[in-house]
Image 1 (tube, rainbow, N blue to C red):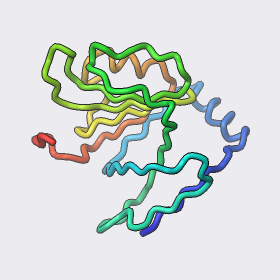
Image 2: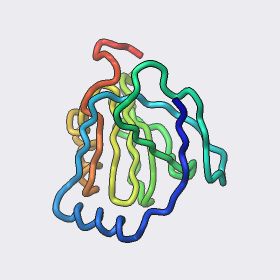
Image 3: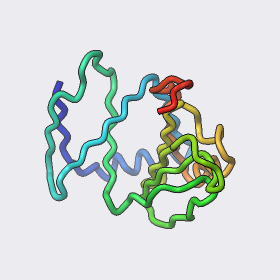
Image 4: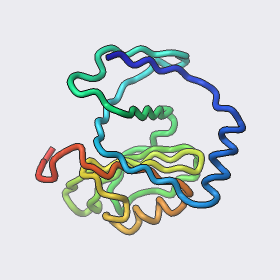
Length: 156
């Protein structure tokens, strides 16, 4: 299986339609099975081909997320998350505070009024520290995986 990704410009009508729909409520996308793969695309590329992405069972749905290097803001303990004012940003946070050894990593990606939250155990943001839930309340749309891609007893 090969995946071909191409950069396109979204029609302003589609963007407005999504914005109008989000005025009436939040969008939630529970995902059944999550497989996360990271690939780097050379800057300025308009197309990218990655061979042999899937081995074995083929997914029913593929979600591709692209993050600018400038959008990544770093790794934080749960009590050290800065207030970021940019419209587009991503960061990884540990579920423990800075005084604790650290136990579990969570990822946030925010852009255009939407926030994506990734937890390999499949928990929503409000399962953890209340401030994670407060971060998601700033956005009209939230997406997270509801099925863990790894076993809850895993220490990886």
